[in-house]
Image 1 (cartoon, helix red, strand yellow):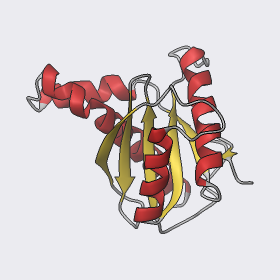
Image 2 (image 1 turned 120 degrees about the vertical axis):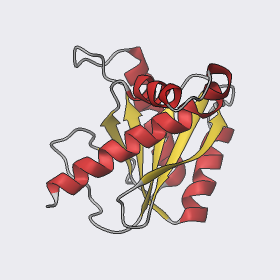
Image 3 (image 1 turned 90 degrees about the horizontal axis):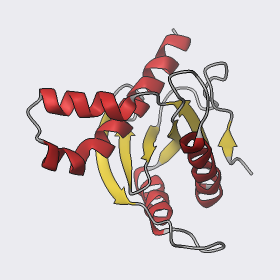
Image 4 (image 1 turned 60 degrees about the vertical axis):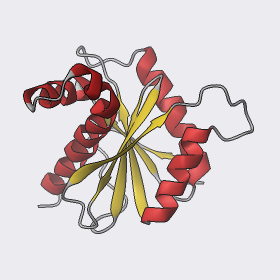
Length: 165
């Protein structure tokens, strides 16, 4: 079982080099998803999924089923889930929920590894960038989760590039 691979900067990617990755921003209502290019250089928005919190074990929540389909359809080699660390560097309730989500997703998409990465401020940064580009708040809600997933994945990709150069 691969499951969730250790999460923070001291651990480098198990899969070096080529292959598409998914970035996932887990919210209580929606799950934003971004995808990388095959060379692992650029993250782009993919989709926003409604979060399914009603499904009980052992059934697979619909959002995770859809993520599993994306993993299969795009030949994903690794999934990066944002871990919302507080500004004080601590894990609160949202981080605990992200860990639970990542653990369950790891079971669903095995053997593809799931990683957790610090996503401090990713949604705030994404919302600010959308606003700077003239995307108004009503439209923003529809894409902010994807934009946050892009921030998460791009930050992780950039960190991997720095480590391997």
